[in-house]
Image (cartoon, rainbow, N blue to C red):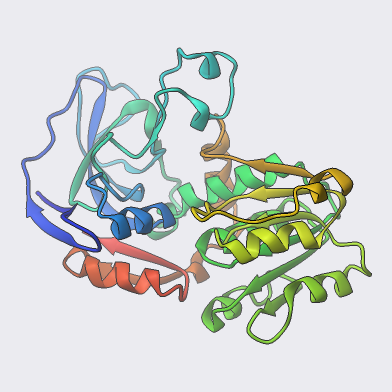
Length: 332
């Protein structure tokens, strides 16, 4: 089989590898599409020799002897995480990402930018007949977005601000709308991403032309947004989130900013803010996200803006780093 391997900073190489051998509770999947995630871009930049690619769909081509719920030929998507089920956090029923042995992916050092991957039976979800492979590749980022909205405790009618309209920000805006947000405002620099959000949010603020804090305060009569989702992972948006959230409001850090951020910590106290972050999702969120897409509650098709073959994966990552358009899907 062919697989994309990290072989240095900003360098992926396509290598021939042996087909994975299955444990008794595993299935072998021929990958149809795998999306590029922001976490993949970080690994690509750093040259981290870890498996990349976890937003994927495909067909089962082989099953282990103990697998009972899946069959060869099933169209599937995979819930890409490992948690032990035994540590303190797992026993408390906490978010999956708090597990002491948690990692995001299929296997610890294997990703899905390859022709075939294996997964354990409990990770695999059959696709409804009306869902395409491309749509299914967006279940995982939709799950992240759904968990963010649930974590915010957003109430029906709340005013929401989404800072950054990359694929996750686009999905957060759509999920918030589907779950009853009153007004949804967003900020973004990329013209193509601004256009992708038309008709989904009430107003997209072009940060090249307008100060986002001033505009959102104007739109909310000086009160600020009830809930702010920081989806850009930048110093500027981290600082803006504190400035434009209302008193008693909630900020959810969805993306990761790896830089040090200077913030007036007193604002959290004096404004009575709640600040939340998360690594993964909770049990049941993946199925809920799949249902949102399958039932047409959110439309992910406009975000499927680019499909590229495995051979062009370096070009695909370079394009993803430019921060334009929606999700880039790799077809092995």
